[in-house]
Image 1 (tube, rainbow, N blue to C red):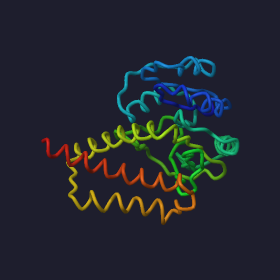
Image 2 (cartoon, one colour):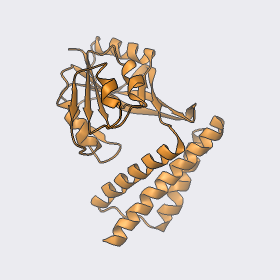
Image 3 (cartoon, helix red, strand yellow):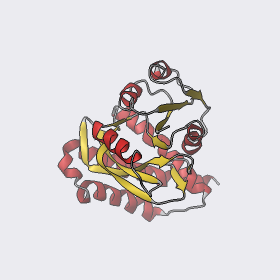
Length: 245
């Protein structure tokens, strides 16, 4: 089998249809859901019958469960709030049908925030892998472990519909910063007052000045401020964990 897409979900009614519409060309869609109570599964069943329930284990382990279900020669990891563009579809199909020495590929991802594509927030995400070669680890922003070389898939982008509204964005940041702080605490990492002051400021300047967030108007400014606040929250929560212990 050619390409399998693997998605983990929980209450993604607002996003899942757009995501699945963009990957109808893959040979197999695997969904691992951790207990959606909205219409996520109802919508998903219109596109695949390979839907599995798994109580939440954390981002990395949830991804690993999805990998045990796939049968494709290549695996595309995609989130429910992401969308594959037609150009990216063509690039993936061309690459997977050609000979390559790479075991994995990064893909360019662009973020839509407050209705605007942020040119200051373009990423390369490791999302396309040969089947059976990797596992994930980490509590948040999980990393892939595998043997082999990595290439970059040129042509096309992955679109991340990052923004629903500020309330949802702040709630997500709160969850992610807590997970990141716990992960660093488990690794016995410590940061002082200087990190609380300097690191958020550096993140703001990097996003807003060096990467050109000022060119993205008000959405670019708000995105840069939120990035700085996320960094501050992460370090503040880590400090709190050490104080409690």
